Length: 413
Ligand code: AMP
Ligand code: GLY
Image 1 (cartoon, rainbow, N blue to C red):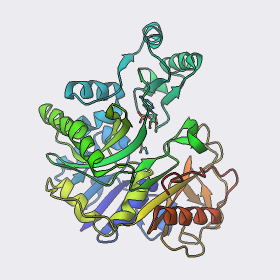
Image 2: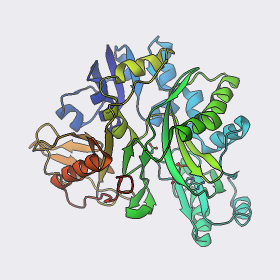
Image 3: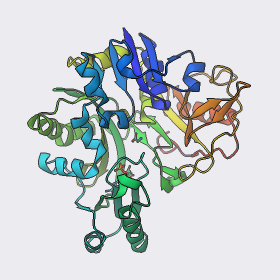
Image 4: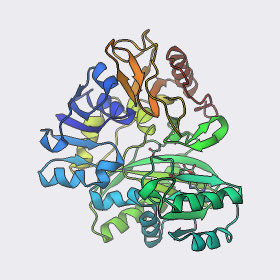
């Protein structure tokens, strides 16, 4: 089988690496780290590539209809069309969809006028949650107990200052409390089956402090989610979603990523993404061994019957981000500790380094080239072993201004 992965981040590096265990892989456009790791990267539009399976990583090409274009050419694609991608492209659309479907979610209002938004905000109790409607790379959400900060954020987002066009409509919603879980559910248009639950660390600082980011690390499986908890998410959240998709005539073939809060009232949906999570993918792919290509092919073909068991190991990913991330990441810092293949200079058992934002200079040195720079993943027989392997590897990789969290998977180890 020949697979084409679309995208250029650590998630796509992990997908390409996992698919390459049992298939030929081409990545478009890929990045310097993937090429160094022996993956074929081409700068060709996906519609010009010949492959048996297309796996679209990021949300943007999905919302722009790339899956529709490829399917119109008769290609097999993992990723929803423009219609299904609306679930991620607009939080206002998603909230209305959840309401119609009867999926439990936070009480909310949608606004594009400051007076109405502020009138609604005063009726809410802390913590206040203000979300940019459109795509904002995970950074468009403010959760704060400071009313003045919430008001300022409402005005900032509605003015378009904060996120340009993505921010001129906002969702204000009830703050929820509980443990967060990323449940990535494979949907083949009819059937839906979950991968093992993962947990992502969204805030930039230890102990969940500082700004929201695209994700600073992850671990899986999330053992505090029991099989009953996963079954409850599937029946109370995913099943009504599938019914609503069918009612609207949306053939969703891809990953329905449920961001769930396990609140005291039961599982509550915070958001849907319509793609693999980043960095969740960097912990999930290593757990599924060489079964990925066949599994994703079955999803795209509408023939999903089962998800293979994991290797039984645990996985931890620690993200190394650039100086200034998430507000204003700096590019061009020289990274040391990576070998010529972009992996660790010295072997570390169970570790793989997925490149998110790196480039190479004329001397072949790796440079920072994005907000999230590297995702250092490790598997182990226990979570503690995976965690200590991942952090030991991180110690070997240095660059000026490196930002990382020290508490990824600490509580779970
Ligand atoms: P989202 O992009 O909607 O998943 O939001 C990003 C992050 O903000 C989530 O992972 C949560 O940590 C937090 N968040 C979002 N919505 C809420 C909410 N209603 N209550 C509390 N925290 C939230
Ligand atoms: N890890 C959060 C996301 O992929 O959106």
